[in-house]
Image (cartoon, rainbow, N blue to C red; front, side, top):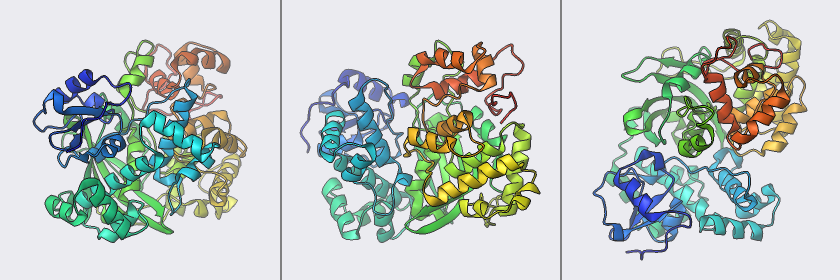
Length: 516
């Protein structure tokens, strides 16, 4: 059995034990408990018999627990926990380490050979040695150990929830070969991957789909989130329908990985009683399940840490503690929709988007009625003529912006996902025709998952804050850093006597006051 190491710096062990005793989902993913009597590490929400206090040690990250010799619990499954994603605006070393971890966690940020410490350091503009030193001081493990844990937990989920051949499990999880995968799995978990599959019997498989559960930290206003998506649903691509107790959200999507394009569908619903989302994914996307899970977590903002955010925002926005920032499963799609929505109503933007999908989206067969189109690719938009776009009702200024977006994506000058560099991407977006600060900030808030995005020029935001200019809005926002993106959602949603101020279910407004 592993020996009890010193708990991670900054963790209050007694408080962690109380949270574990209460199965408090607010702390899920914020720490993990290693149990020396069993050699297993668990999430705070694990429902196994509570271990004795003297047998528990606590870690901020799963990688730390595994580095100490603990293996993941097969019941609470640490791979399902929300990620810890604290942000800071003060500690430069912590910012660097967190950004490095964010790059490791983001599958869309890397090509087939995956991230490495040297490449991450180059991306962040520091030396490999400096990155390793800062990372180990912040997380207690090296970048390689952190990455290895991420890959192994992703593989563990594929083994438990799919029937993919082990070769595909290894490759989908980022391992270069089955031999390396098997060796790492046995070394870390003391169990052969095939034995784990036999024990789990692929319990997440349902016919031609795979079902997994994703944890989140309460509170979470799922009704507001699904209402936001429902009012923007494009025909053929997405829909929100009534379900048993909770609405169902379904959509099509395309994932490019390993030189191949994988197209399929997903369906999800919230399970508030268990603080989980039940995700069902079509069989055609099973080989890229880790990427799909990452995108769904971003779509629903499942890794948000409400206690940290609310400690900054609650005094100003006491009614918004459960609100999350809606994300996207496709950054290019979100950018296109943001451009289409400039200065028109939500309904009009949805109509334009649906026409674009009908004209340029590929058909796809799914088991869900009405879900039969993929959103157009950058190549499809880039090859569209001005006349073809004009017939859809898209004005020339928007046509130029759409073509520039598509060409930037195809040329690799523009990347729109959570691993992208925010300042560089904001500058690249605003260099395109028809895209100003508001649109760039909105894209950063939803596609780049930048929690401090703040479209100060938004008229409705200014009215909700009781100010009359972008400068005054920016000055008022300084107290909410680094969570200004969440403050924007709360301001739009907050009850206000100003009739023009929109709710969360309505789109933000541009400088001109028209709904985007």
